[in-house]
Amino acid sequence: MGLRDKYAWAISQAKGKFDGKAEERDGKLYWTGTVKTEEDKNEIWAAIKTIPEWRDEIVADIKVVGGPAAAPAAAKTYTVKSGDTLSAIAKSQLGSAGDYMKIFDANRDQLSDPDKIKPGQVLKIPA
Image (cartoon, rainbow, N blue to C red; front, side, top):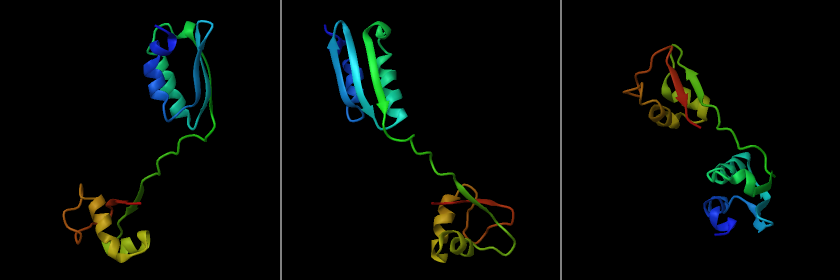
């Protein structure tokens, strides 16, 4: 069994993420190429490292050419003030009073009726 066969799972995990080649020569498997994110690189390395002998058999030059993976957007919240309504909050936060149900749906864990909000409640505002 050759090294490409031995590392077939790692090679399959790299498909679609790795732009390069895994070439066997001189008793080692040489990985040369690029990935778009650090996460893709880490996934390939995790797959390679499932083989206990990887340190003796792998020579890799995998470069990240994209930026870091985009961080998820921080959740936006709004603290209800006296006199607020969901439609007024929707107008100020989402641009349309008619989007009040989007806020209600995002907060069903704490709201049972769109007309019953209380000052001090912290509502999630959907993107």
